[in-house]
Length: 282
Image (cartoon, rainbow, N blue to C red):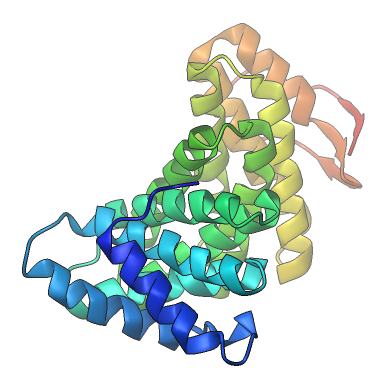
């Protein structure tokens, strides 16, 4: 279990005291987390401290409080992250880099609380992007930093990027669709980053790519986005990233993501490689 710092401990204790009388973790609402985070950070700023690290500690403390009461459900992860980001924005200057730190903290805190990590990761991503939008952070750079946070957080707890990719892309699509952003561009950028990271650490790039496309399809169906277009954007980002590594990696990823995935016929519109007919996968 992660060791809490002073901020995380103060947030955990304050939130536990607020909700344990009712025993309902749903009472850890966004405004409660926001106000508790802001009040705690105000005192911390007087003694210094890097805001991103403090925010990360705050979100871990929030999720420890949730786990202490009745378990960190997915919506609690999302709302905790939004509350922490908005709380930081009340007392300092929120940055996209801070979103990376908050997502790492959310994954760590969710793991400590025994949450199902696929759902928790998706909700952490969604919460960070929604929170970032609410404090005026640039959407494109927010997506980059949040994706980097899921990669680093997953590795920190010993998870597999192939598992996290589906949740990460689903969270990005859901959040960007909810803020009327460019879903296609965000999806392609996210899968490109995930596959690039997988290649750097020797993970199976094709497996990560298929997982990412599955996440895009899941979220597009839920949000009402065009499923085929969203899946194609995910596939394009994955293929482009893989060909940046090598022709062999690019061919492997193109073959993996071209065809029927999760009931959707996926085509790849990329300047790299050659189109093929693919196969059926789910």
